[in-house]
Image (cartoon, rainbow over all chains, first blue to last red):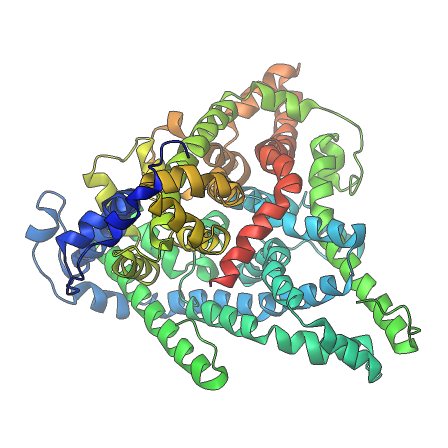
Length: 322
Length: 305
C-alpha cells in the first residue's frame, strides 16, 4: 500500500459534522462518490434492461403499433386480457403449464433430499467424491444437448429406449410425438439433469448438523436409519421449506428454453404452455400487445402465488423468504 | 464421527447395503446415457441405430467426427460461442464485482435503496415482449450486443458475491486502510479484489457456463446465421435435424447415389453424438477440476438466501 498517506490524515475524514439524515444529501453523495461509481454499471444495466421493460408492459393495455411507439399507441383497456380469458385454449395453456410444473415438483422435489441424505451417509472417501462428481455432471449439459439426447434416445425406430422396450416384447412408443408422453419426458429428463445438483444445498445443510446429537443417539442405541430419520431429516427442514416456497411460487413461471426445444406440432396439445404461447404470439406472429398481456397475466399470478405461499410458510413453520 | 467402537447391528448392516445400492443406482442412471453418447459417437452408425451398440463402441469408426471437422457452421458457431463466453463473462464481472462490493460496505449510504432497487427486479419483470421491443428500439437486434449486454447482470450473483465480501474480507482491514487514506477505489482494487480470487472464479464459471450453454437469446435476437452461437447450430442439427450441410459432406464421401442416400441418413444420425461431445467438451474438461468452485458458489448463496 505504498500510495497510502501517512497516519496523520486520521482526524480529517472523521471530523464531519452530523447532518440530519435526509433522503438525498449532497454530503453523503460526496463521501461515497467512489462507491456510487462502482454500482453505476449494474445500476444502469438494471435500469435499462429491467425497469424500462416494466414501463413497456403498458402495451398490454394498448394496440401497440411500432410506428407510433409505446406511448402514442391507442389504449384498448382490457381487450387483450379478455381475448385471452375467452379463448378456447386458455384452460389448455393453464392446465399444461401447471400440470408440468406440479408433476415436476412432486417427482423432482423429494429426490435431491433423498440423494443428499444418502450421499451424506457415505462418510468421505473416493466413492463419495466420485458419486458426487457424476451425479452433479448433467447440470452442466446444455438444454440443447439435453433436447438432442431425448430426440435421439426416444426415437421410435433407432432410439435405445425403444430397443430396450423391444427386449421386453413391447411395441415402440413415439415418445416425442405422443402428447400423452410429453409431460413425463419433460419432467423425468429434468429430474435426470437436476437431482444431483439439487442435492448440493441439502448436503450443505447436513454438514451443519451437530455431531454430538449423533453421538448421543448412538449411546442411546439408535440405528443409522433412525438417526437419519430423526436427526438429519429434521435438520434440513428449513432448507426444504425455503426451496418448496420457491418451487410453488414458480408453478406458473415455466422457462421457454426446454419446452420450445421439445415442442412439435404433434405433441402440441400437451406441450403448449403459457411461455411458448407468448413466444409464438409475440415473436413469431408479431402480436406484441396480445403476447405482452398474456405475459403480464402470467407474472401477476406468479407474484400473487409467491406472496400467498410465503405467508403460509411463515405461519406454519416460521421459515419464509422475507 | 467414528462409530467403529460400537459393532454394527443387523439393522445397520442392512441399511448400509441399501445405501450403497441406492447410490450405485443413482450413479448408474446418470452415467449410462453419458457413456452411451461417447460410445455411440465412435461406433458404426448401423450398430447404433439397430440397437446392437448399447454400452461399449461397436464397429469403431470416426466417420462422425470426420464430418464434424468439415462442418463449417459448427466451427463458426464454436468461434462465436468462445467470443460470447469471454466477452460476456468479462462484462458480467465488470458489473457484478464492483456493485457487490459497494453494497457490502456497511458505510455506503446508497446501500439500502439500491438493494431494494435490485430485489424488485427479482419479482417483477416486463417479460419477453417488452424486453424484446426495448432491444429492438435500441437497435441491438441482430448484433452481438443483444447477447452480451441485456442479461449481463444477475441479481442473484450480486447477492452471492456481496455475501462473500461481507464474510471473507474483514471490514476492520478496510477501515484501517481507509484511515490510512486509501480511497474506496484503492480499497476495492488493491485490498478486496486480491483477497477474492475464489468468488471471482465462481462468478466467472457461473456466468461463463451459462453463456456457453444458452441458445434462447440468439433464437430471439439473431437472424444472421453468421452470428449464431454454437448452441443454435446444435439446435438445428440435434433437434430440428436440419442436415443439409452435413448430408452434403456425407454424400461426397460415398460412391453410388443409392448408397449415398442411405449413408446420408446414417451419418446424419451418427454425427449427433459426436456433436454433443464436441460442444460440451470445454465444460466437461473444466468441470471435474472446478467442481468445488461451483459447489462453493451454491453454498455461499444458500447462506445468504
